[in-house]
Length: 254
Image (tube, rainbow, N blue to C red; front, side, top):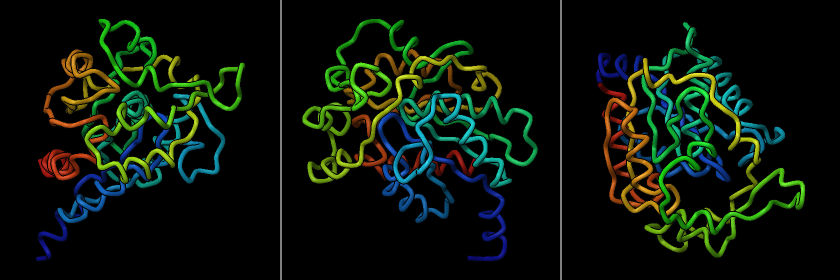
């Protein structure tokens, strides 16, 4: 690599990967390896209480503040990539970072994710969309806190078809074993802004998604500046790693 190429790599924004409900930073491992091959630096974040995080579970605002805090500590421009529920998180985080000089958000990437307008919540927007058959709904169960309804978990026998339908069974089995409870509060909190109105944004529709119906994705995608698609399931970072990495690579290098 020449000195010019090295300098260009250093000056590129850092890609911050924000997982969706029930997941953790672990879900991005294959994609990060692929991005490394392209010289694209990325950091996968464990939202509080997920994956290897020892912090207590939080709500959507707390999750977004955590992402904003990580971005600020990095101190360089960032591209925020949010998957599923993580779309709401990156939108709120970008709003928190709107005046940041140390960590300006250069692009928002909604990977089969919730793209929220100001005042909307993940659950509220989902309920307002036209009825579609989504397997994820049947897989959601009350968490170990029981009647309090503070968290939700997924039925392991239904999670493969809902989330990982295009993934090899052994890979989805490993992913399912890592899933953790998701706080109910994360789904009901409204966002404080709509940064996709001022920050360049890309929506990636996953055409075989059984968790967020493609028709619902296309409605949300109209809010973004660029709309792309992948012919895969709800977990393209596993099922279509190369295609997902290519999209992010092109965004970072533009």
